[in-house]
Image (tube, rainbow, N blue to C red; front, side, top):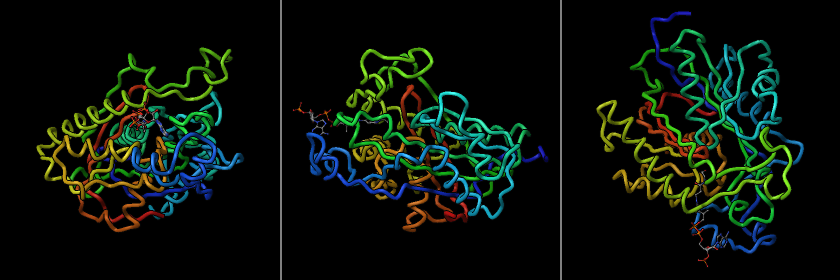
Length: 333
Ligand code: UT7
């Protein structure tokens, strides 16, 4: 390994969505809601839902394989999996993903920062490269968040969808296209109750109330924190690089609600045409959200090599964070 060059450079991108499309009307047949409410309050038209036999590991293997194909090489020394829906409470899912990709033997572990997971996992992968621990890292975000939603809860069921996305990072130069950084990462555990699955973890294995096995979310409070923290964090990475908001060509934020994306862009003074939004077709896919948005923006050509891209996310924990890169000549595999 060469420790002289410390930047982690994005060199491959992959996405995978379960084939089953669930439109708003299907949700409205089961819950007291409507296509009109979901579309106008969230921007979501449809989402993908994994069939019962498809797990976080399965989706991660698909997306990871696509990212390796995009990178043109399946050589990596480490795999970081961002997920809050690991197949089991123990062990982590990443080693099974590595084995599924034929990469048994490499370092592999999970990072759980819920919807901020992908940004945290990117920072972890960049850190492995900067520390001389790895030369090439596969970073995957994969979540079957629909499994955590109470089928009777109209507050969460219409919002979340399933999917996976991945990137390959390689050791490179800080001024190359694709070089990641700086990073801005934060958490606030005092507000964990705003979005939580109360039971089923190691602290409370069994719940008296079966609803406690599902996610509960205080939507309005999460909405406010998401806008404020993502704007704050976006400004922090720009300040560290001496850039201004006008220098950002594409804003790729965690896709939680179209109104959160619009409000955050407004707080930042960012024109709406620089905001990447694919929430309409995938919903909130938690840790998969940012790489899925990148892949869709590449496919529809709204993301081009040379664009300066600001990534920012907010999620349960609470957690939030951002980073920057100039888009390299990379297409989804
Ligand atoms: O990934 C990070 C974590 N998640 C998020 O970032 C999500 C953040 N929060 C949100 O996106 C929004 O708060 C929601 C989409 C969850 C809810 O939208 P909202 O505009 O904040 O709605 P609300 O909770 O203020 O409710 C407004 C009204 C209420 O009726 P009343 O009291 O005004 O009569 C709700 O009962 O809408 C009602 N309502 C619904 N109506 C139809 C709430 N959910 C639904 C629904 N369908 N699904």
